[in-house]
Image 1 (cartoon, rainbow, N blue to C red):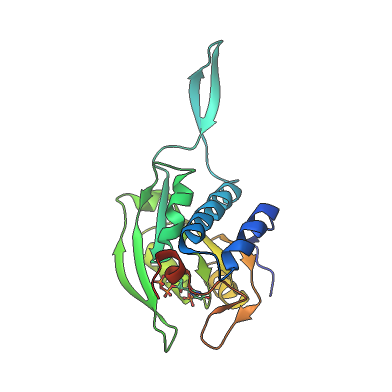
Image 2: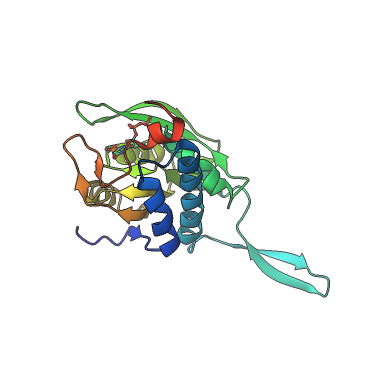
Length: 212
Ligand code: PRP
Ligand code: URA
């Protein structure tokens, strides 16, 4: 795959360990859900190195000092329904007060084209740093359309986080949205003829919610 300035692939050993278990077809729904959440929390830490901090006055037991905090209300989480829901708690572990918007997209199984069926975002989202989350970045259609939808509604600072990315999808999103940092835990080999990521983990939504 070409190199992109806005693509970050994590090679953290702990993430690799957890992804190995996540991929295993014998990993059950409960453990799958917990792993998605844990990996998301690690990714959130890793992707926040550039977060804007605000000076605050703090009184320690010994003296007054100026320290730095992430401003309340500056972060929003937007999962792409359904599978993105599995990542919300993982970001909330780091930013418990982050408001949550939802974008509903499904892939037409024949054409693999994404269809938007729902969008509800918190007030003032255009001023926040938005974490758009979806465990799977396959053809990139869903992520590109969700990013278009957020930008259309005024969002300016967006970070996209996916647990597994296919080169095809990463390239598509990175090219269409060069202003959006794209974070993936791992870059897989390719897509199969049905648009599934190889080696992948199967259908993330079904494994998270026990459908199928
Ligand atoms: C999956 C996944 C992404 C999308 C990725 O969702 O969670 O949203 O496919 O594919 P793409 O990059 O080719 O667009 P799916 O459409 O299966 O819906 P679900 O989350 O409801 O299971
Ligand atoms: N969506 C999934 O859930 N899995 C894939 O491999 C591709 C798209």
